[in-house]
Length: 133
Image 1 (cartoon, rainbow, N blue to C red):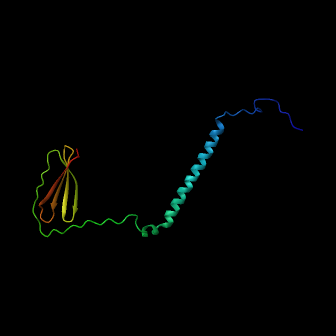
Image 2 (tube, rainbow, N blue to C red; image 1 turned 90 degrees about the vertical axis):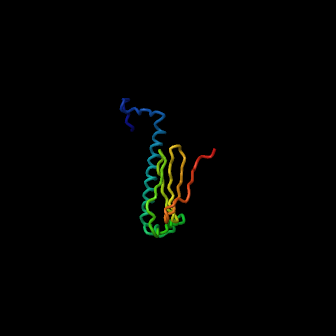
Image 3 (cartoon, rainbow, N blue to C red; image 1 turned 135 degrees about the horizontal axis):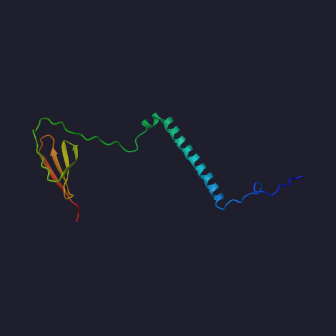
């Protein structure tokens, strides 16, 4: 025989709100996604650690960049004075093929490139770079 329990607040099942079931499903799905993500991270770390030396032996993705060659300066050329206009700032300096390229950022937004020969210290040329109109 089934026992009849008296109707009381403890024995009545309370109805769940309608939004609770989708929230439970969302929590379970997000938990599974977190576990899957941790699994992917663990797999990636394990494969990279086991590859170790093989990765350094593999060919690089891009061709190696040729190192710039600089001529040896046979004799000194003394002091070369380079005039920088007021308000200008010296930017990048590049050495290549026995030449030095100085980039000056002028106050009016223009760029000036000065090219010098490292063997003689003479200015080889000047480029004024402006925006096209």
